[in-house]
Image (tube, rainbow, N blue to C red; front, side, top):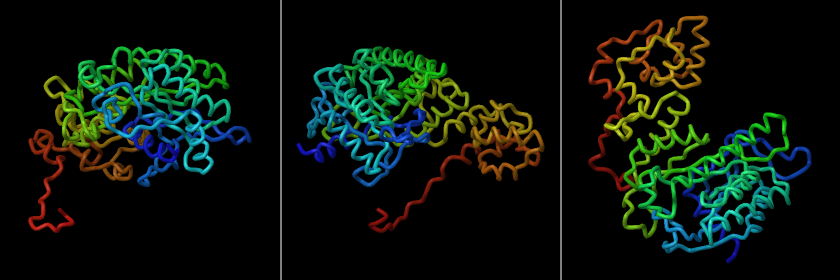
Length: 413
């Protein structure tokens, strides 16, 4: 098969993997006249998908052949898709050629499982090793690892990559048994735990002045939302565990996308994309706003409100905690006010040392006044108690229904 045909097949097959962010990578460059490539501090850019979208990395599968039969995967063993496979040298050539044309500054490489997990990892590592050792490539490399592979191979992958990841796919073993029977939640978590220990070791060496250490700076994972009956509480509880126990950089939530010739046990329709968005918002609250999973969701409400963002939904359930005095409230309390983000809370804390804050000051900070007014007291605003107690408060924030055109044109239909 021609290289162009392989690229078309295997680049398209990689589009379902969302966990390819490059934030947190160690900066590397070739400004001294040595090596090839660079890693930008804020991420990579200048790669283009077939439909013209700008993407950050050359994102490929080494092969879409796979011995596993995960029902949600288009590349599963029983899927009737066109198959292709790169050699390690072909991926190296593509990466260097695309970089020299200024299309990309990094590589995201994953693969279907061929022969067995160890053999597949050896092929993936061969690409990264050749780029780093033979061509002195200093750009960003993200390798997708396989939990069933030996710990030694995963550790080797981490020495050549800036970021490594293992996809959890689903939040419970029950779901995996149904949709991905070859995969084990325990085995995946064990691999994540080993990666965390190696990441900590590398971090300690860098802290002690070892500037030559080459090791991934973090790991990430991805879960599929809407392929089974897992609740939002299941996803957030698992994410909370991953952030706390494995120092996960990011958990990516990917809405299930129906695939050609799907398995009969998969849903016919994709979940609403707003569900994926709400999970990201709730994830953000846990990571940066001090919320616990049990505060965002409960056994009686295991799924997020699709009409309201999670922080606003929490505030409406806990009206007894409001209004908050902007002049005296702690940082932790201000972070829980709907409409206030981390950056503005830090600015408010600095400003209030010198003056009493008014609504005009919030406007200058680009705070949404309609959103914060019911929950926040300023020098010139004290929300009436009846507003917080009113049943109409929720209606104030819920998107208004839109009247559809009775006689719409064909274009509008």
